[in-house]
Image (tube, rainbow, N blue to C red; front, side, top):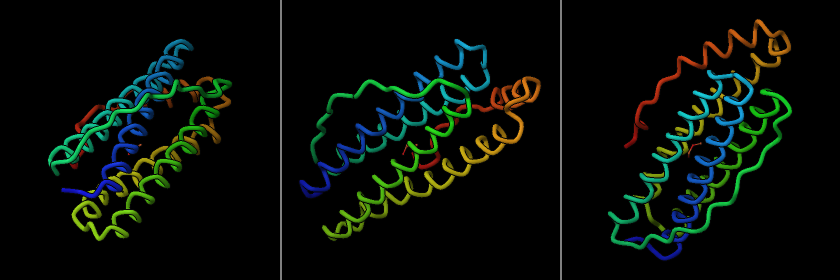
Length: 169
Ligand code: OFO
């Protein structure tokens, strides 16, 4: 069993993960609309991974004999002025998710819930990887993204991303 405080913050985190999935799915649609199918592929896979993250939390709460409370998911909106603008927002978004997970970790410590503290470490490690991979894409877009032929090559590279189920599942 987990405390009510932990239950509530984990349910809030489920909402954030599903919001992330929605956000990435809408970004995937935007990239398809402007013919950047590799970028679209990247965002679509990211969306699937966010659903995994939400579902792992879902199973964890149930597995700890606690309750699921699914809240409304906010409609995503983002600045569509350029691929770079979108990726800068992705980076900002992921930083906010890291901050939310830090709050979950701090709450588990306050509640002396070391099992959940250990569980949430998987998410914190995943965030380090996500922030790093998004930073690299931003760096490439800043260095070469203004050139159409370079953008085409970055798009080709992002087309190669393949979905694999989140490693901590
Ligand atoms: Fe963006 O990764 Fe979920 O937590």
